[in-house]
Length: 83
Image (cartoon, rainbow, N blue to C red; front, side, top):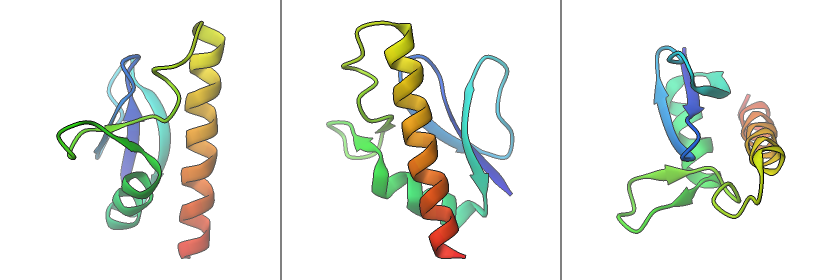
């Protein structure tokens, strides 16, 4: 079992646990979670760093939370389709 999470900078990480202060996105099988996040995230210039879509464009904290929640919903939907 793995968990995808992000901090306020929008960088998405996948690990065994969600660190303090991080926003959880989704949890599930590590390979399926990696695939779902990779397919739905925005990729940084290096092609490796994954970002929450629309978070960088958010004008305020409410919009940032909405971006994370939307991304979380989409990742969860993708994980359900793979089952």
